[in-house]
Image (cartoon, rainbow, N blue to C red; front, side):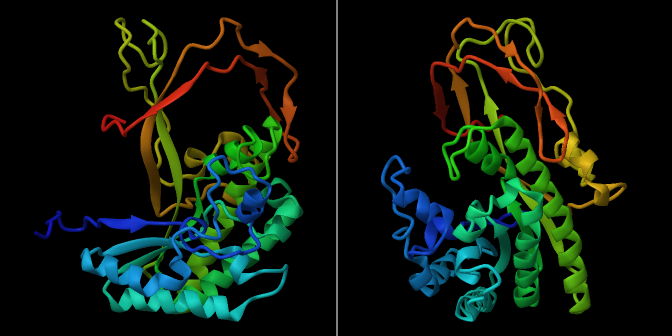
Length: 329
């Protein structure tokens, strides 16, 4: 039986190149595996072998009557060395995008989905403003080579997850644990998104297209304390979680990036840089009570842009328990 959805509702699938393609590419995640840093031993060189089985996978999507598919491109494949373009990789992605369109599936292309080529990683990746032109050059290459096949774009997937896991918790490459560096990465990714937004619209407009849609995807998670407080922000008198008014996401850059980042971006003044707002929502988490030690205030940290950010030392929760997705989230 074929499901019927309201007009304009698109049910599709989503993937990332490092998650599904396989292959021994020179990326930060392949390097992370070789360092023995992936806890369950998952090897990104194996993955789902989508690089070789893409026609079969696309046909499966068509068999499910899916109207849209979100996929990513692997920067390390397209630019294995700084300034070097592998035309065979570009041709491979073009063939896949063309095949999706032939099957009646609209591609939604993600430019950056956690994965960096090692040459960019060794330079400091998004933690240094002087590196950003390398990413922007890659994004422009994607626009030039795939712009005739793709109207819908995600510039960066989950910058909050990339920054916090890689630069605050240290669980992802490059494994740093620096609060100020985390905010620097977020600022630089916000800058890249704005530049990419403008560039994608300008590039496709020059090609004769007026249907360009550009956004980014942000990860949201509901946190429910294992022992809810009886009062406080976001709680009623009986400890139930209640809605708290927050910033909206109508596209104004100061509303969808950290305020510090927006203030530091000269190019962002008065502009809107989001045609749609992507929300990745998977689950909720319930932290168990932390030790009674209160957060201790310390000297503020400073980002590479010279912005002062608060810094505190807090006791970690004893455990963080995740459950299946809560619809109320």
